[in-house]
Amino acid sequence: MSVQIEAVRPATARRTPTHNLTRTSGIGLGVTMIWFSLLVLIPLAAVVATAAAGGWDGFWRAITNEQTAAAIRVTVTAAFAVTLVNIVIGTMISWVLVRDRFPGKGLLELVIDIPFALPTIVAGLVLLSLYGNDSPLGLHFANTKWSIYLAFLFVTLPFIVRTVQPVLEELDQEIEEAAASLGASRFTTFRRIILPALVPAIAAGAALSFARAVGEYGSLVLLSGNLPFESEVTSVRILSAIENDNRATAASIATLLLLISLLVIVVLDIVQRRVARRG
Amino acid sequence: MAERHRYPKSPTTYLLRAIVIVYLVLLVVWPVALVVTNTFENGGEALRSIVEDPDMMAALRLTAIAAVVATAINTVFGVSMSLLLVRNEFPGKRVVSSLLDLPLSVSPIVVGLALVLVYGGRNGWLGPTLESWGFQVIFSTPGIIMATAFVSLPLVIREVVPVLEELGIEQEQAAQSLGASGAQTFWRITLPSIKWAVIYGVVLTLARSLGEFGAVKVVSGNVLGETRTATLAVEEKYLNFDQQGAYAIAFLLASVSVLAILVVFLLRAREDRRERSLS
Image 1: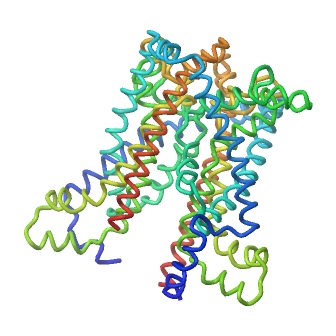
Image 2 (image 1 turned 90 degrees about the vertical axis):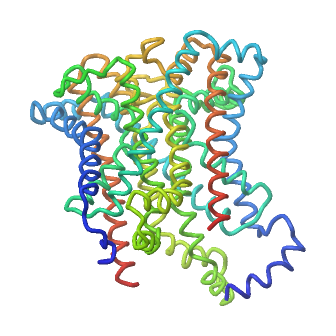
Image 3 (image 1 turned 30 degrees about the horizontal axis):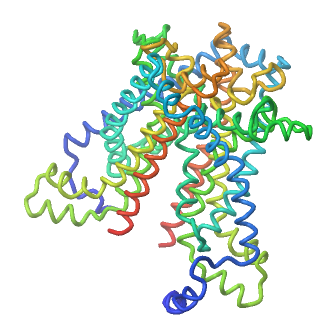
């Protein structure tokens, strides 16, 4: 059946090279795109336009303001470090979820999704209960820069696990067994056979986790104390610019964050296309 | 299934398992459990005082309304967009498809700023015009709904698109060749086949919508009893040293979101079992 359809398609494709929309789906596309533009595209364009209105000088002044630059440095450093940690621990978690088997493993699956589902402000409160001033462990991370690392680790937990896990499930174990029977150690098998297959998924998860961390706000509100030059993140700088009615500055810092998000999406697209080509 | 375990369990297996469990307990399980115990420290006292406080009930009601409306919008939008992306060719499809993921990686504060710049009543792009028609968006419920819809926009699409791709179009073509109209094909053939994906998407969207904080904080104005949502109330209570109150609302929000992922988790497990018994 599908072979037949494939055979017919080139002829019709030549006649209508750009689209195959019926009237109904054409109207549907129009309506959905109008809503998408009103909700997402026009507002985001407004951010960039407001930043651009101040010219390059205004943009540069806004993001190199001493306090803002410090906040960007703190945020990017923490996001980068947390993403590295996630690459290691996320791969380990997905390995255990796919290959190991023990009672209560199903519960771990559930635990992974909690940070995604939990409201960010609640996530902050949750972390405060174990790492705040009343910490039963005696770990007082609240109002220090470590609180940022902690919050980022919490909210980005699911990203790498959820991208790597399906790939690991699909992986053919016979190749690993072949490698092992040819005398490869388990470490060599992991490094030469398994890891290369996981790299695209890890990269995709890492990009998402980095993007999420760079823009994080809610989980830090109660936890980090927003001390300038110490535990103040970029989002907080944008918010205080909004609250001071300094829209140009807010838009400039926001544009920088948007550029980072866009970069992440481009990286993801490239990685996914490469995987699709290979597969 | 048995061949999954040809490797004997080595010390590495147990080490990995231990690291993963300890990490997840310290980062997620223990802190979440502490919030639950903190909430019930004085029995049900804290929860009761929330239920008896009309302002808090107003906040919870507003959160529920915004979440339900945003989820409804995103479900209709998501299903239509998924169908268009999978079933049709049109210019710019790849760009649209990448842009749809943008809301997941944009900082909530940037989302709020973007909406204020366009719909702000004083000097937004469209805000003053809308206001002269008597329609206030920012500092009012429509703005809260838009911010909520923005941040949870791609969740339905991400669930539905892979299922539609796998489904193929044979059944739909068969229905159409037997004389079914487009609407009949959608309601009788397409929708039943993507039912579970839509349900997962809706549950995830709802969980995410209930918990939105940063974007809502920027657009709502945070007026007690009017535009203060439940997540904003958590922050307010905590900063006013009403920790019990903050924990109680956090507990309510967290139970809804944990319930949501539990539902998805159980449905998925059931579906997996059914698939396995079929194959």
